[in-house]
Image 1 (tube, rainbow, N blue to C red):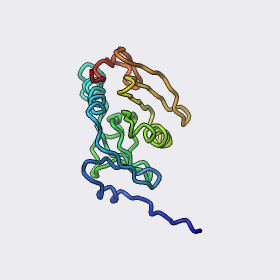
Image 2: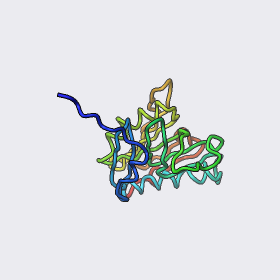
Image 3: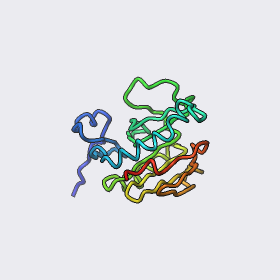
Image 4: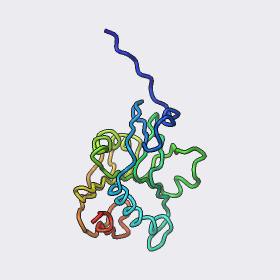
Length: 186
């Protein structure tokens, strides 16, 4: 029996998805998931609130970063949409002309949900490592935990697991203390 060949998905295929879906392409396959839940968005907004002022505008911190919510990132033939991503300003001095950038971020954060946990951990994290993203945070709203990873020799190394209401300094934003209490919907 002959195996049917599937056409590899391309960027334009994402335009056919309904507006209430987030589409990504991984290894030629379209992955579509519904927009995030409020609990998920609350965590992403909380992380943004903790780091954006000090690291993007320099208010109470060193500045020098561009921090974006759900940007499209083209890594080879893959189109990924992390919950949050950040670039050192000198690596992304101007916004791209397209809806996506081909410049890998320096940091990504994925907020887990029951629909995305396997995609985020098993498919996306290896792609981020393959394309040289230096740091990855994984936030779990249900467990109220934040894991921090650093890329070393092409592999993710866990540098810390934090939870509940801790006040922590986490790479690459260790110059400030992050209040995890601001991340969880109580």
